Image 1 (tube, rainbow, N blue to C red):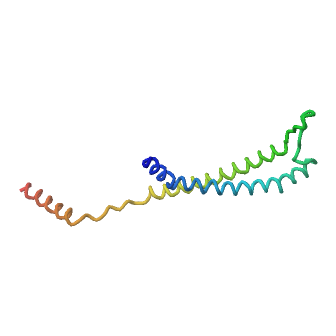
Image 2: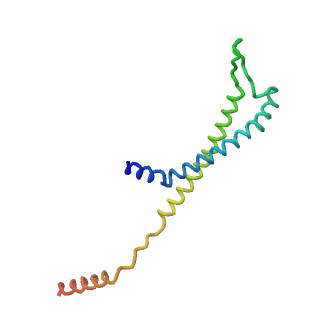
Image 3: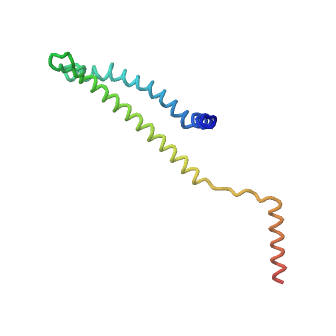
Length: 134
């Protein structure tokens, strides 16, 4: 059980999980903004041009059940707006990531200065080569 809790703690505290949690919270808040946009701005504009309310309903016989077409259209509009925003955000993130990777690939790799031991061994090797040639 201790191992399970340790693994769960490592999983829960990873950066990706925390980023995902923040994304879900921000997404929920953004969803309410999109819903307000469609309910209070887009639906009245559509009603102006269409001559009818977006809150269209179809009654199903004498049962009192209705099909709420307006709610469905509003949900589709919300989905399209959210999908477009997510697409543009992901496209921007991918672009930034590819630019950062390209810069990292293009950066010249500087070799570190050899240590004193390496310098000394190199000098000894060169002297041995000159002695072997004689």
